[in-house]
Length: 423
Ligand code: SF4
Image (cartoon, rainbow, N blue to C red; front, side, top):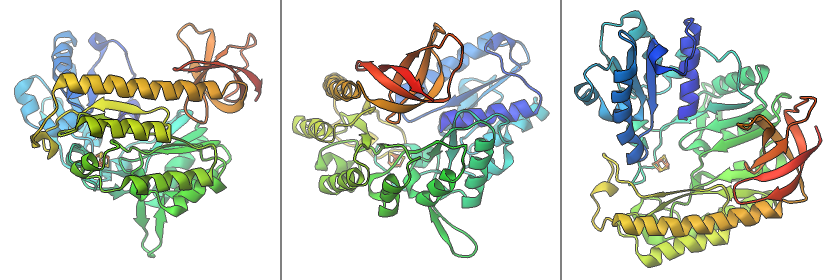
């Protein structure tokens, strides 16, 4: 979501005739787009702002947007008095105000809903993989999560607006669409005639656009995985056989304290339905280890579910107490050294599963999407339908197919190697 927000901010500045520079000392405006999901990222923001203040040229404007801005509010100006603007994740479309009136201090951390999507200019060139936000905010209120505070309650964008943005991306270079939302499969929009649209309707609409070859969505909440959506994996070949559906913990006790009210049986039933719909589907998850009160046995259950589902491309983190959340004040906070040990054990298990899955792809031919070259410029980086990176020698004639069938020749934990068979 932050990557998408940054693109839209860049497009907005572009429309005002500004050009991007990598050199802070050269910039007329410096914007830090920030994430507050984990404590470490939040802490980095203010030290980075101090560095920007000391490096920028006199008169250059600088400030923060995004979730740390929403969380810090006016206190950001107390910590760094030279800051020019502090704008929350739903107010960054107000940035032009500071360009028009650079002598003011601009503060807006309101949860304005979807206004920003209407006010921002479209990107002229859409990236090959284009993110299209379809909803913002979340109603689930997991006890560790700051998102309901920073991004507010769930709001779904109008179906026609999302289709219009998808079509714009398709006509301007997008080959893959990734529908985005904090609770993406909770998307629900009812138009003025009373017709309700779900994520499955958006997938169907995007699949009809000939330029779009691949569709995916992230991030899903398990109990919102409705049958109409699961069926899309059976009927829509453009929908990639890959799904991020975080379980967070394999312990029913921990899930209860996290306020994630699904049973492991219900979760596994969804996985079974997904696999029945599309035999080759692969599932990814997010995990939190060291949640308050997590016992050795709770952690063992997380390892068990990871091995049972055989998640690939997963994200695992140590629990990080966030302000405005219930879990931050729960008793039995887990010491840092135990969190660290458990994370290492889980990461090892997930890495081993990933390596085995990658090796199982050797000798297969997979349709892959080109994402550019590596740092040496001698190799092309492709993305498989399961989101693995596949490294391919760059053809001498510089004929680089955007989509190619690639025969996988080797694999390790981190990536695949392959050769282009056809495009
Ligand atoms: S479902 Fe996701 S975004 Fe919503 S509160 Fe839970 S962790 Fe946060």
